[in-house]
Length: 128
Ligand code: 9YT
Image (tube, rainbow, N blue to C red; front, side, top):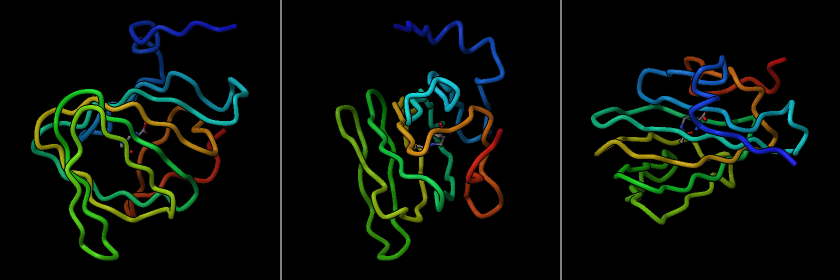
């Protein structure tokens, strides 16, 4: 069994500051679980274009206030504590931080740990 502590991972290269967000990759591909788990802070006042063409992601908000706008239909979803959204159709979207929002994010396939969005909001299929 493994025990992973946020404060320890924050000191490693698996803590990534994406500008609009900061993410600590608690479990990655190397852990062999078939998914990754990250703790992500979405910063207040930011808007990020995201399109995970190569991944499915579920995002559970545990604190704060964010908003997701899906681009195929321009629907806007309020995301607050105790709410999960699942990008089950690789949904292209805008993610806005209304207040700082703390999320737990699960990716399938797993992140390798160092990903940052490219200019189209995509993470590469595999980063080894
Ligand atoms: C919610 C979301 O996708 N935020 C961007 C960062 C991502 N969760 C990550 O890389 O851990």
